[in-house]
Length: 420
Ligand SMILES: Cc1cc2nc3c(=O)[nH]c(=O)nc-3n(C[C@H](O)[C@H](O)[C@H](O)COP(=O)(O)OP(=O)(O)OC[C@H]3O[C@@H](n4cnc5c(N)ncnc54)[C@H](O)[C@@H]3O)c2cc1C
Image (cartoon, rainbow, N blue to C red; front, side, top):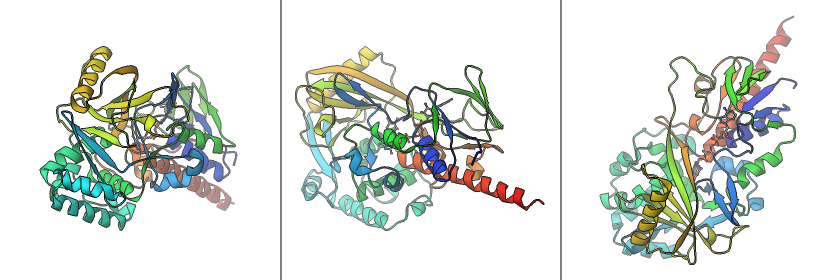
């Protein structure tokens, strides 16, 4: 097992790849551009508050998350399966009636969902619980909006619930994302809960890191270029490697002729300190006005966090594009919070602008394959962009790419043994 395997990137996909390679007896070396692991999943401590880099959750029904993480050690904090919808000071609650009977009445009496909508939601929920994940990714690939219309949901529930809710998940506000993603996420919401570890989302990569025994990680080591059997760091240092797994967007590092540039959805999360919580429950708030800049709000301090700060913490996510300066953005967001949710007296803490938050993909798949993931003789690629934008996909792609590497190395070994 002396084969030199290098992994570029210590995000979830790179870490899952290292775990898989270690299990097969290899000792990979990771080159990570930044000073810490986690990639898009990180948590900062700021004035005593845990601030995730962008509002994100772990759906505890994700099959790969169940395999890779020890949930009890993460002390996952559940968010209620529903949302509070805000518009000009008024609010109503909508949710998953199969687990919270209280939500059934609020959903029906909100006037938002017709009886037909509730029935269609139930039918979809039942259908998906019986559908294998692989089969979800064989569904005809149309946009989520087209899919919802095709199934007969009313314009009202689409505009007032599906659009704001899934804008926060897809990080685009027109529901253009493939219906495969919608169906997978809807199934996961139906099977489990949206959760956040007690120590913040950054606990996820930290737990994976702890499992690595024979992996070397070189931090602050941005790779400038990859060639067959060779990595070149930005400072000019060169390393040879038998196998290279690029566990991040390959653009700029390795360019294949006619390779399409990946495009990304972006978002911003702003954190505020407040005296009181407008939403008492552990539930997400959505702004349903289609012209609003703010998409969703959540009070992380409603969860049992390890480090809670002194007051209440409010996270506010903006998906819509804008050209506002930081001051203008804070002013506009504060105005919207006051106008739509009656939330006042905020102290701005910090914002995270994430330009490459989720890959914008036209073809979503559940399975990594060599045709797309093998870039050369010795070069492979992994990351959520290979499958679909989610932490489950990041773990799955890292695992599948490294299993392909292990299988190919084994084949090579068998061939060389066969030669007399
Ligand atoms: C705001 C936001 C909200 C999200 N919400 C959810 C959610 O609710 N649920 C969900 O399942 N998923 C969510 N996601 C997606 C999820 O975070 C990603 O799918 C997952 O983290 C991707 O992991 P990855 O390893 O593929 O890539 P990354 O996390 O991007 O890791 C790539 C790593 O490679 C490193 N790197 C890049 N270039 C180089 C280089 N040249 N040399 C060396 N190292 C390099 C980077 O520093 C990084 O550490 C969200 C993401 C964001 C940003």
